[in-house]
Image (cartoon, rainbow, N blue to C red):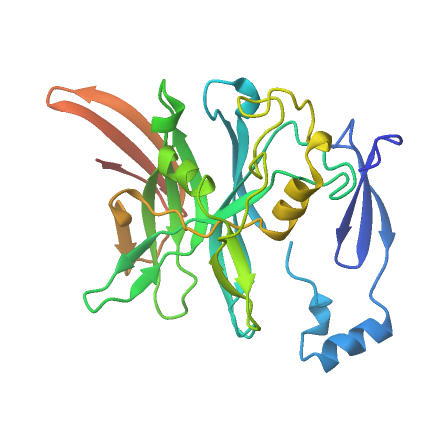
Length: 298
């Protein structure tokens, strides 16, 4: 971000883009900047695909929502829903994980570290899976769409998600629903920490600085901090090294609400309504596919 020139610079494969932050629809300026022959050879020597430039692919964005967190409006968070490819501990296999991240809307970056970068960014894995009779889980690991069914109390908001599977042998779709309170519990829980030669993820057991990393300035817990630039250095350093939460987020009853397998279509969109009937109150799910619109009642 270059606030003096009202520009934001974005790096992409073989290009650097410059966008006008006051008019994002304006055609961006672009500079062609391919990798040098030396860098391509380094990729080949490392056993990586040189066409990817050895970079980890930017995440696949799905949706975003501003959600209150308590009674103080300054504690509200922007929640991002996305999926990304992550490598396992052997660094040889990539798996797609669906994720939720959140930041503070008033995050202006750090003073000495993470300058012009987020200082409140945290993320957690979003799980939608079924457990087989013999124990192993079958994951619907690709998030396609989300819908928030809001209530008067933000903590009772329900998050509905459409998931598909990236498996080459198993095809299907699933709908999983999550309590916002469970999501917030994970973000208020232990941080993930990489340890050992294989960078194994464990629950961080050391000292957590104050204010807790991920807390918004000017909120209920930091009324005297006006900006993230006032965060202590150890808070910024901690969140730079520990952006991932240790616990994953599981759906209500730890299983999908709806599963569809063995079909020639997949669910891609979801909308939910709350209706009253003679025998009670129902949530009506409208599920869009590539072929037709279906609906289910819960």
